[in-house]
Length: 206
Image (cartoon, rainbow, N blue to C red; front, side, top):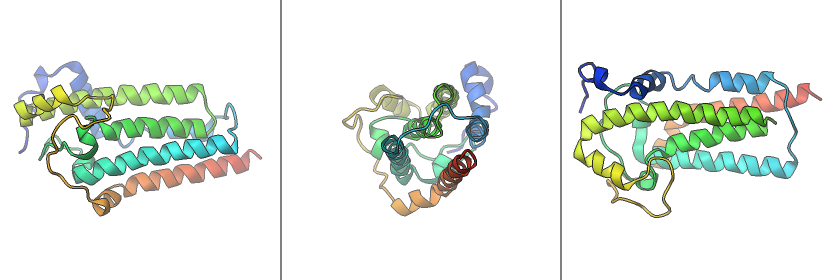
């Protein structure tokens, strides 16, 4: 079901209007942050045990992304304003924005892996602000597209703080690992580039 944006966008809150632009360019939003990680001198060096814990954190965040994408499919990669279906299965029964939570965690942890304190805090704040605006936009789209069913979903499932127990009945979307891995190719490429950048930077600083 396509959504006609032009007729209603003017009535949106400013946060949603900003979020619409940020949503369309969200793939490029982390680029300035990653460049800073590569170019700026690190504040500290982690121990082997600390690196292991940080890498585990990144892996868990990516696992959350795979869990979410495995249920939501290619809808998570769209840059358009149309939403075909309301997915509340898997992690979406626990929290409404699992992908964005995972992204914030991954970006912040990567900052710590590269040895930054204040910059990692900045990355966390920057990413949180980015997704605040994007979610504001998405909620306008979902509310217009799905009406009362989406309103009921928002009233039972938290936006940011996950619930340990499912807060709604599943929409019936099944988990597809192959679909998730296929959709996550660009994320895997980005993480590989980050790892290579880390080792290159570490080698140059020796």
